[in-house]
Image (cartoon, rainbow, N blue to C red):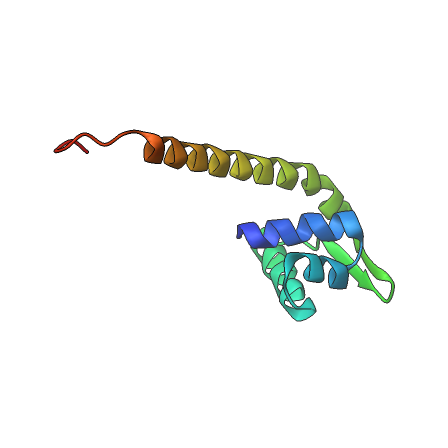
Length: 99
């Protein structure tokens, strides 16, 4: 399971349409479908029901959505800390011979 799959799942859950989620994420619609298929296989559960008007969460999808949101929030926090640490390190004056 990959971050891009989790992000696709959450966005589809929020928007209710795979094509619009794909566009927003900068993917093709088949790529988004593949991400969801991979996530469903990894979790061994059906997360979305596709229909002509969009996509709806299954009961399993509704159950895991809060956890997926929490995982993505943690990943975003880790990235933010990492970026701040790198930026702070770059801002420190370098002393000759000391790294």
